[in-house]
Image (tube, rainbow, N blue to C red):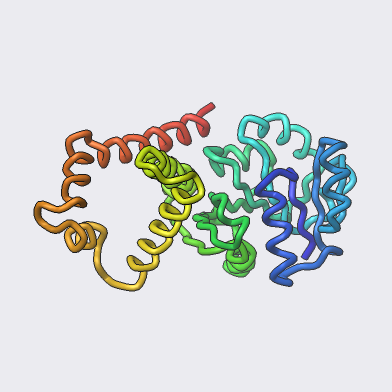
Length: 267
């Protein structure tokens, strides 16, 4: 199967490396379309496939086309690609907010899979949700899921709206975690720890808490109750969080991301 990745940015490069690392494809079957000559030259040196600068050179060769560009760049890209597309080609889009119907209309194709990965995919620890148009066959869907699984966990959703929802949770979610970690590191340094000590304390705390959560069937609330003894330090922190509505603010932030994803789909 010949794979063409359009866009040599973070996620495009992540997919290329993950596919090759898992031996699910080869460099001979991997193509990357990158319009920036400077970036294309860098990609060519990395030996992850054949790098092209023009769609006319490579699009017709691809069985699977992965669209990994910014959503605001999609109208111009669709206009460029549409005359070159073969009817049997399968398209996988990771553009935030861009609906499958818009992709179908813009490209004149029917077989569309829409996915939302996140940045930890770079380490094979990503979370990707995906859905598909009805024209995609079961075999094609399994094939693409196998490719996506090289970057971490996958979740298929029937309702395309849930792709926007996952954008707000797992897509943008790593930034929420890093925001909370940064605040805890800042608190640690104000308390007298060095930067390296603060990072060690916070990173290990997050890693340990996640592993402990995964090792049991306890909910987050149950774990909080187990840690927060009456009149203790954890209870004092949780009372402060509740007073400042931190929990509700996090939910509000996630919904702000959802609304923005929906706006991108309408623009």
